[in-house]
Length: 445
Image 1 (cartoon, rainbow, N blue to C red):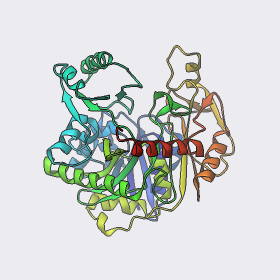
Image 2 (cartoon, helix red, strand yellow):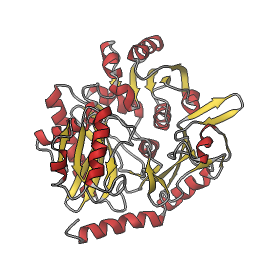
Image 3 (cartoon, rainbow, N blue to C red):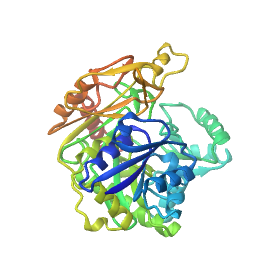
Image 4 (tube, one colour):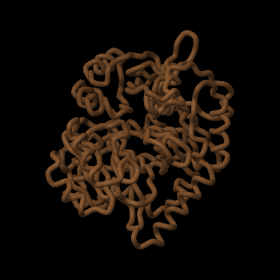
């Protein structure tokens, strides 16, 4: 019997719970959640509803249920020291300590780490704690990206051409950011295609999972505001249509060097998921940012494909024995499409905003996998909140069939919902391929 404490209540954690329950190690899940996710709850022996800024409550729950180890899903409990508290109590965890989680929680820490240890992948950047010098640095850049120092739920990055147009607007944004964050990182705007490379790390060994491409924009054809992610896809050859094996190897090598550097910097080995958001550019692979956990939605693309026992993977991360474990992912395509309230990502004044608290019904999922995110289960059924509701995943031998399965299942979810029907489709993927061809041909890119 293996007792696993799972911390988190989103679709990512639902996918983690499913991977745990596929194990042959007779697992039992005890879930510590901020709100009750019915999908995770149905797989759990016991559920505790608590806060992600209260690690002592998680430790008490872990002791009560006799947890052998913990898996921390979201960034908030990592940033509030849940792993530190669990380790102090003698409970090992898959997830970094608060000090190591700065890889995600502090953009300036990560940029400085790569710079200090000579690791490739940094764009041109500078960190600022006041507006002094920012305007002069703008003059050195052809395009500007602004990143608040701290957690922003994946929605804090501001890009010239999307969120602002002029340097004057950029400076105003910096002033606003510095009122609520300790610093702002100013970077050159890169041109290319982004990809997610989620890596498993035991402090010494780093193993890549299949690359995934996420879609942050709210509406079809990459229009509208940024979100936590409207969907994602992966390919059966464990590459992407615009991404070759050399670029994946480049991203993995950067992550391996970062794992070594952060251990030298802090004296603590990194144990958990090191998820790099990368961009392939004309001059190679560049680092956009690191996250200290699985991605959401990207976890839903790769965890269903994992054929190695997930409990064994977790124990290898904890014990530092990943190099001795053969980690295998099925050669399948996946397409994830998030079902969201129609008002998701829109202004509260928009008439569609009222859709957030509506009841939904789920019909025949037609072979897809459903992962609950922000869903409230009431006596009369399932209700949405203001955030993403359900991750719908199609899995097949090829992308076209995987997309068809996901799209068919989405149509079976009834209520005031929306999604991006273009994710995983041929036209959108061809757009990505053409974009990279243009960049490689254009010396100014």
